[in-house]
Image (cartoon, rainbow, N blue to C red; front, side):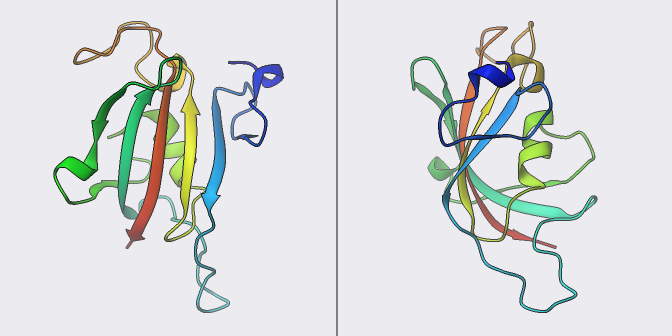
Length: 130
């Protein structure tokens, strides 16, 4: 996915357009002037997600089936690089759709049944961060 291919209504979060985002529900503003509106580097975040293949819309995984959000620490490399990039831009309670080119997802090798070179789409909802 290159900059010229950024879908209408989406914003490129990387210079190469490999991570794009569309806000579907605005998040909360910071409660106090000194508060961060978005999660900081090293912050623990919890979010709900649904992952699908961008080309077909077929869902391959969702946190909703287990009934609890998925948690990770921003910047530690424990998730897809595209997630780290996108979640850093989210406000609490924000819902968005992100599209990740293979370079920001599972690359050419794929993983757990997801074929290599797959462009993935995720619906994300940032529940909270610490």
